[in-house]
Length: 113
Image 1 (cartoon, rainbow, N blue to C red):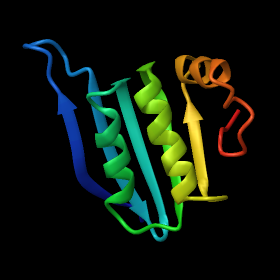
Image 2 (cartoon, one colour; image 1 turned 180 degrees about the vertical axis):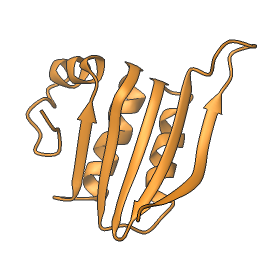
Image 3 (tube, rainbow, N blue to C red; image 1 turned 30 degrees about the vertical axis):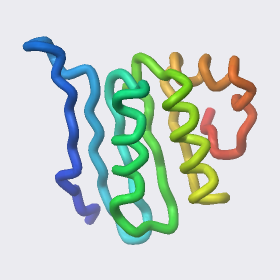
Image 4 (cartoon, rainbow, N blue to C red; image 1 turned 60 degrees about the vertical axis):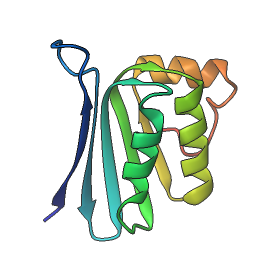
């Protein structure tokens, strides 16, 4: 059974619903990091650090609920791809897919359809 970790972070924007959250779940040597909301220069490092907090041989970065993705987020994903060569899977939202396509990263092996 997967072990859910309480590595959750939310950024609150003055009483509004949080615009960013990240959770991590470990299943053996596989870590699944689920990100919600906006990944930008204020939150990209939190996403990156959450992905490195637990030892894992494989990483799935679930970005299907991400609504905004900037250059800091791209940099974080590229760094994760370097740390997990041939062991990273990124599940993109339409917004993430578009940004990665525009940045020239849309054909990477780690990017799921």
